[in-house]
Image 1 (cartoon, rainbow, N blue to C red):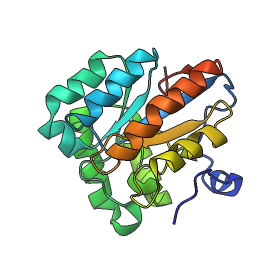
Image 2 (cartoon, helix red, strand yellow; image 1 turned 30 degrees about the vertical axis):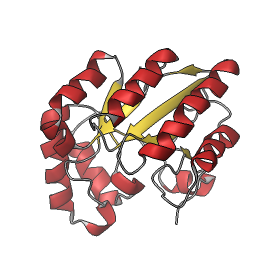
Image 3 (cartoon, rainbow, N blue to C red; image 1 turned 90 degrees about the vertical axis):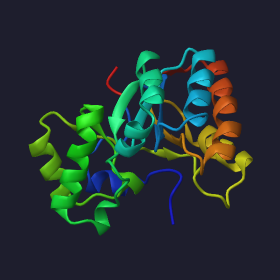
Image 4 (tube, one colour; image 1 turned 90 degrees about the horizontal axis):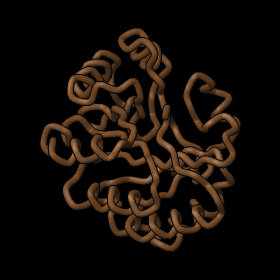
Length: 207
């Protein structure tokens, strides 16, 4: 079960997490989870370059370890980088020490003050631990979900999800993963084209 548009109630329950830009209505913050992955991430980088778009990539530490050359491509292109744990851990199903250790393992490779919890699932106790371990950390969520990870969702529906729900200032979630590839490769360029024609700019978080 997931919601394409994050409800205000959920944002209110976790006010210390970053859900949107806080009112920058002419910018869209496009984000990608689960990379870097050969072929998929370079495709994303190429599409972003075509639209002079900067984005934010929340990387899995183990993928950075396995594909350092792709990770370097993301950095060299000037995009923002974030931590997504080393093994894509679900915080609700993970004890706090294991979660922190996994975050720190990824941090050793990624070295960012941006973090997104996999599945958007993190305990309040884990938030506190990460803030203590990494002063100045920003825990970044989203307020528009493409649902490109869902094999039951059509590519056209993924496009519809983001185009209909983005008005400006949103943090939008895509995935540069093999699982999401077909839907993301359809929706991303069409969404960027639509937003570009509407006069939006595309920025990395914190840039």
